[in-house]
Image (cartoon, rainbow, N blue to C red; front, side, top):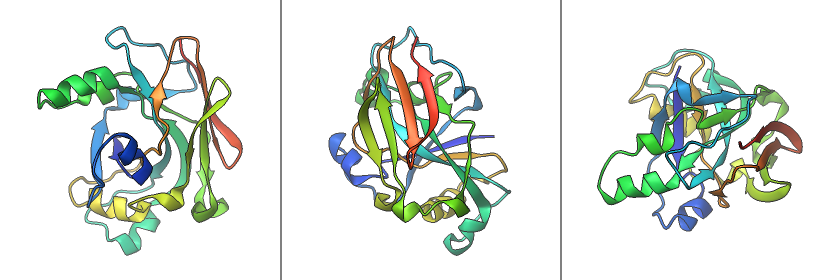
Length: 202
């Protein structure tokens, strides 16, 4: 199982990061050890600037390679919410030195994810929204209709390079509003008003 994360899939997030809009999907990987399910998040001692990035997550249902966008919808059936935790200070250091930044994105427990999955047939993504709250304060609102690249386009693109396997997860990108967390914080994420993910930072 692999975790595929899409970068800059919302124009407002690209703007807040001072990054150009992508012309094709940007993706990177997190290892399975990054997964965190229904547990508290413990702030790692190697960073002083961990940021939250709430995202809609898609689970792949079957093996596929070179999938055409027109058939991509056959490869997934459920959504949930997750958080892409990023060690922003480490990421910046790596960027400045022209180095890969997996350690800033793929560290242990950097991908909290809900254990509740929503069938896509019960959702209209064009009318859906997800929200991230930090200590009860709204920090992010994501509208899948604002994706730069649709889920089907993402699946088609990624499958040209990587074989998708059953159980693979795709984090589809975060909207504007990302920010730092502190020990003692409580984070919660809701999809169409239903809280799917809650965790404490310790």
